[in-house]
Length: 175
View 1 (cartoon, rainbow, N blue to C red):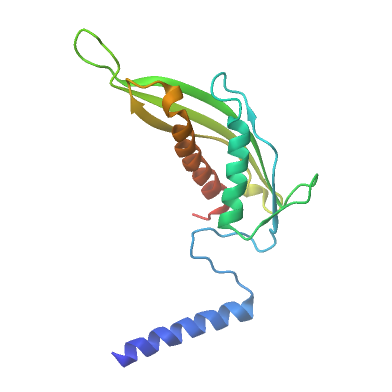
View 2: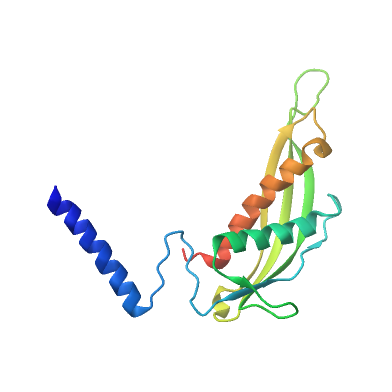
């Protein structure tokens, strides 16, 4: 048993020594950011969807900024300057659709779905092959006896959380 503990300690020490000597950056979160990338910029997203709250684009921009700050060591680019990586885009879809029709004479929908689509233009100024222009969508199901306005705050939070995660993974995770 002591030999096993020793070999793990030895392995960790070797791993740390190699990484310190070579300057290689190892990550355990699945995010692999080029060490040259130090800053990011986010152009305020716009709302091109015909429905939804007026503050939706501002919320998405702020949520994306906070997510990057929490999950990386990147810094925002100075005011008015572009970052080493750049995000911009628009909320392009906001729609409520019935998911499951009700039975019986009332034919009331038993469940509804709010779907939001956000188009993101991502520019990696160090590796153009990692740049993309792509739409991301997610949905939130809610009971048919509620209106979208009754669930909108929670629904948008849940949807944006997933879209931001997907955007972040596409931009900064090497799969």
